[in-house]
Length: 93
Image (cartoon, rainbow, N blue to C red; front, top):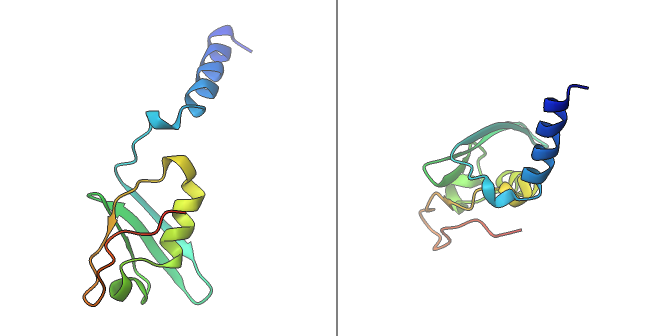
């Protein structure tokens, strides 16, 4: 293996151990739920999901699962403000 590539691999390992170096600014993913496939996204410091639960509650299991999957680099923005609920942010997992 080329020595400069080895250096880059070592640097990548060091960076990966420091997740505070990463700030997710935008994210979109298809999420295959039990009943349908949804789009979970993070834009302008807000989470959203195309599932039917999200508009009423401002959070859903799909967003919570994605936050968990992203772990330490998960963006911690606000979810959409639901019409009938004071809850503005997704619970932290």
